[in-house]
Length: 67
Image 1 (cartoon, rainbow, N blue to C red):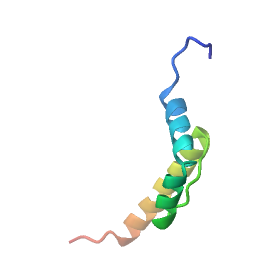
Image 2: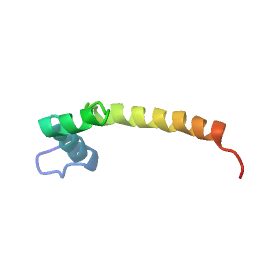
Image 3: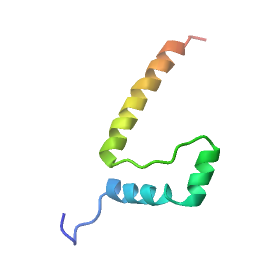
């Protein structure tokens, strides 16, 4: 990518999230709520999210009962 090209949405989002998860107030708040502040590359996040969708879809299917 050359210097005059616009940044992609994933690149901008990744930079913003990485900056946020390093802020002490965010780390404190998330830790108090049981979350683990971490950063991932866009590719790592894509893999994580796709795996989470599969995992939770299986849970929903298992416990989805007709009313």
